[in-house]
Amino acid sequence: MSALIGKPKYEFNKLQKRLRRQVGNAIVDYAMIEEGDKVMVCLSGGKDSYTLLEILRNLQRNAPIDFELVAVNLDQKQPGFPEHVLPHYLDGLGVSYHILERDTYSVVKEKTPEGKTTCALCSRLRRGSLYGFAEEIGATKVALGHHREDILETLFLNMFYGGTLKAMPPKLLSDDGRNIVIRPLAYCREADIAEFARLMEFPIIPCNLCGSQPNLQRQVVKEMLGEWEKTHPGRLETMFKAVTNVAPSQLADRDLFDFQGLEAKRETLNANRIETFDLLTRKL
Image (tube, rainbow, N blue to C red; front, side, top):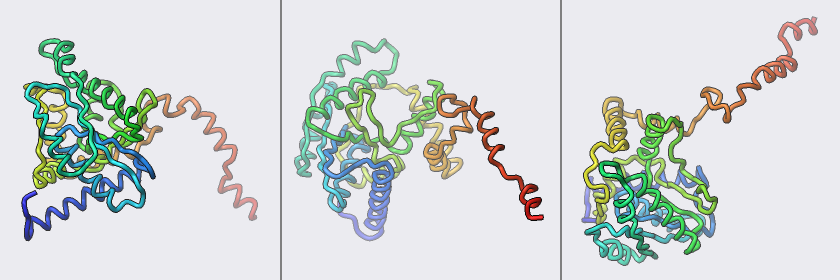
């Protein structure tokens, strides 16, 4: 990071403290990290994962518990991938790390039909590779760099295209029950992360596996949310609060709420209710 003085330095300190506070609150709220945890930080080379690693390192120094951090990058063998960037950066930090080499690029290109987006298969292969490696190195938690907007985008993607009301939880047990996934940036705004990454001068590695895919559903939703926030500042924060404040009785999922049992519940409540008139009668 270039030397900052005066107001720029003050603003950077404010930003860093805000991110640390938000990450710390998320960790506490969802019991993400415990004493003795070995946290595998998935480092892609993008702004989010760089910020995640940096903030976790900051918190680690003053945390009331001891936990270990290990950075892991998945080299997917994309043509032109700058293999030297992350090792050079991590060596400079003195952070323990692994570079996991898996040629998922060829698989994605082979299996994805012409004109279709590559994100779903790429994500699935990447996730499987990283989860398996977490077991190999004895990691107790897998930390991903998803932030507030990622969570909201996923919520709307599932609503619009999947017919489900779900997003990305801050803490998750993987489907096979072997890994606990955490998202410490869940409370953080993407704009704050982008600004922090710029000021920290992280060596960003763009993901060029997708090529040019301007009509990605996630990009469409991202633009929609960005327009909402521009027109109605604070709307995204309110929507995120809604994700943390669910009222099952006000939705329509029969597995979440016992709608069929409402009549029986009414009868029980009425049987146990002491009417005001009865109380007055007894006093007289």
